[in-house]
Image (tube, rainbow, N blue to C red):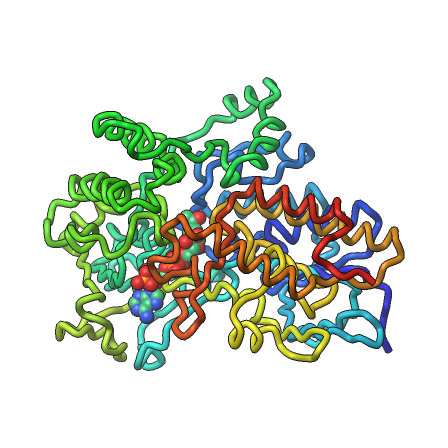
Length: 537
Ligand code: N01
């Protein structure tokens, strides 16, 4: 028999899941969370590999709820995973949310039941619930991607994907021969952290990461308390909703050609020294669309790298003379001492674009230059399946067809990066076709969760049963996402920005790049117009 006591089921308890739960519970709705993890934190629970650290600075990277920020202070501008975990523990206790979460509970399937107008959600450990609304707060990085390397299963040493790093036992790397495949943010961070202490490090890089200077610094409790007393925090949180990327810095509206080479050089230095994503956000507006502007940004970055890496052959692999893709086309990460690691004689780097991995053997990795890299530990820093974070659940909508099959066959179609036609009363956060990669998590999810809460609330108040987007609205959003991407470099290299990191997927922009503030306005206007683009019944 269908139990109709649950209004909303949320999947995941990272930033989005927690806020969604807190907001809906406050309204008096019955709401529950299933999370495959053992505790709250989402990506910060899973990604416990050495060196994991956030790339958005605090206090931007936290909840804007005064009941939380008032009593919390950080120790660093860009906190590490352990401190972020402590933050989630604090949040969980302060908001008393664990009582509404079932941990170690992975959702296997969600099927729309048109006879009851409810979802039937089944978990791998045998629970079944029937909520009216389903909110997938599964983010963009909850499904690791592991390439089908020949022989991977034969490796006899220790092998982990960065997002499945063991949390209950220490992985010994000191004095070991370690290999890292992948140089995205995860690879760069683990290489930077363990590079000096291992016996030998073999880095396998297919594409260089144009890593930017983090400019990390310690924070004192006093400076944070002072800012709070000066009333700055509410302004910061309001402001982050108004900028392009959820940071305080607005994108540069000046053209590359409006400045002299000297002015540009000084500007680049200034942005570089600010750290974080300033060098991208503050770059000239046409850096993504004009080759000259783009090449100059690349050359500035390249010189910074070459100045730090002593071995010119290694430096050339890390920052080649001819850029493999335009600056900004792939997600850059932030580093502190990444490039200095390559000055250690026991650290080698193989350029997989020239010498691909031929196979993984029981004792190491064989590359096409004929070298067999002997390894005790193999780290797969090979990223995530972005759409897989949703389709890892066998979601079936009104017509009984699976979302995975639809997206695999037709490409990803959503309305506003938050709902999908044919999947009534289903919402998702921080996933495909939202500002996701171009906005920090707490900002983007605050906008989305608030919208979802108001939508559910509106439906209950107006005795409405179902909401789902129209196919036309979805096609329109698909086009808007493409249009916003046109002037940027983001379709000019295969990566997780465009579904290109998983072979065989349809290339399409997976992020709305028109800005977080513009996105928030669109969501708001849609609601104000009585949920234009949606069918309500
Ligand atoms: O994943 P990625 P990630 N053979 O997809 C390589 C966030 N994040 O986990 O570029 C060989 O960026 C692949 O090579 P290529 C952040 O938003 C944040 O590192 O496709 N190599 C690439 O080098 C980030 O952007 C933080 O040629 C293969 C790497 O694997 C996002 O998560 C920390 C391969 C994958 O890089 C994802 O980052 C960590 C193959 N067959 C993550 N397949 C912070 O907050 C893939 N690769 C700082």
